Image (cartoon, rainbow over all chains, first blue to last red; front, side, top):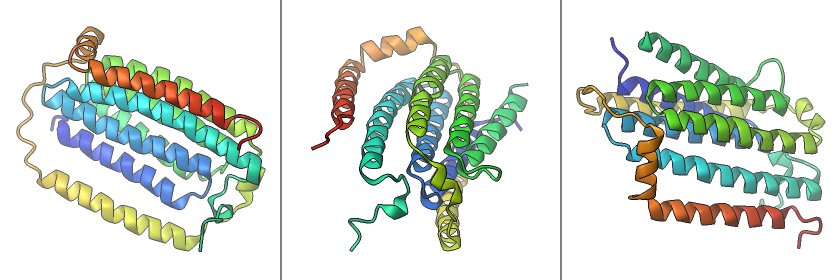
Length: 101
Length: 166
């Protein structure tokens, strides 16, 4: 059986699920951030696969924009984490419950 | 040959992705970051198999290069010794696995029932010149907006990194 669109989409779904598990289960802000990157990459893979198998380059342009936005998001997010660490000396989400009722 | 390469790269991507979130040997974020680099490189291999050559190069340059260096810098700035002593709650693992399993089941069932159609022979490839032409004609406005977004992000990061954050 030759590899088709479905194969790539299954890989993408599995990678997305892995990232989501990381976001839910892990309690370290940095690991949660890396899991977010995994999820973004899974979405990118799905877009590139669709672009390839529908003969349409628009999906790849979209992935290009996604990568750019992800880079900006990582820069801002890591700056936020550093600022938070300066104030609270932790990157553990269970120590950051100030807004909890 | 291509099919074998697909299975190899897909397997590597998923294994490295798993090691990012749950490394049985070490809870250190640095190892997670290193496995994320490997997962991204394996994903770039999948992009090459999909003939998205430009995106594969960008993936390695931007993600494995720039973004991960940023991650490692921040990890080394922070003192993360305490993380390795933390216990992960069993309830969290069970709840997380159940909810993610449900979402994955929805994904896969909708995917396998979708009329994806017979895969016609793909002729397109994402070479740099075709992507560049598209980027500077049809997608010129989003391209410029993204440049503004990067500027905004840069200003925001400089502001956030100031010593006395008000």
